[in-house]
Length: 134
Image (cartoon, rainbow, N blue to C red):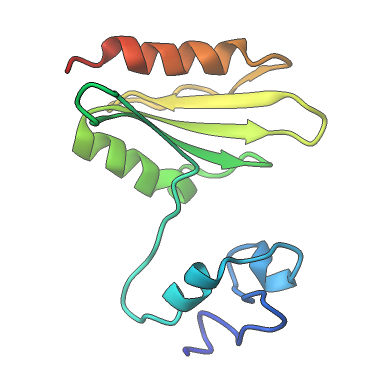
């Protein structure tokens, strides 16, 4: 295992330099821990993948975080959306209950839209559904 990118796994938690697994405060799945031992690749977990039941093609990829992140930190989610011609979104689930939503439509990234209800996020999901043609 490369010491510069990933410290040894301790008590079921991987200690990495880029996320909270390094502090041991968040459990890392065994599969993710194993995947981190493979050199020369990166991995991505998709927090939500909305697809059409008729054709099984993607409509929306969502990355979920607890705090706002930089554009580079959800670039792969947007790359997947580009590859499949669908929307991508960053959803920030704030500790106090509000939801922040940023939408990528293939060309632009919207401003972070904050709301204390799920309505805006639902509208983004419905737009992804409605824009899709099987």
